[in-house]
Image 1 (cartoon, one colour):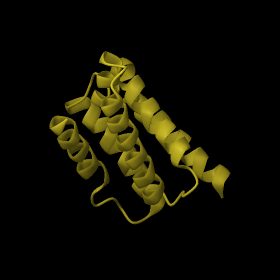
Image 2 (spheres, helix red, strand yellow):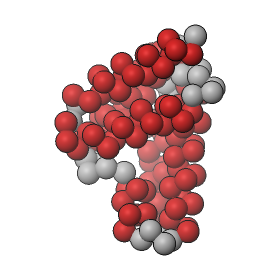
Image 3 (cartoon, one colour):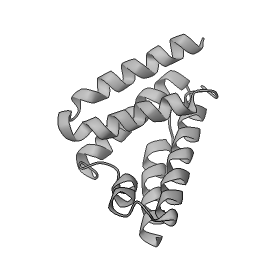
Image 4 (tube, helix red, strand yellow):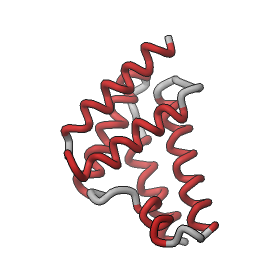
Length: 123
């Protein structure tokens, strides 16, 4: 459990620290950072999802997954200044991480396009 908590912090800091103040630039930078992380550290997907898949009956693992993803969604919506779009942003981020093992950096541009479309529909 301590390893998962450590991994949570190791994910959040590089993804969210020192993002540009402009919400559009912050969202692009966030997706770029997640894509880069996939290339260098987690090319097989999310450790939290893998743990729950390996032990689906574990309430503790499911709670860690839930808290991790909720914090990612909250931080992404704050950075993008899209307070009501947490679930949509999480869907974009999850889509990026789930398809990255198949298509690599090519999916990053698609994620950024979907994020821009989300901003347009919210304005």
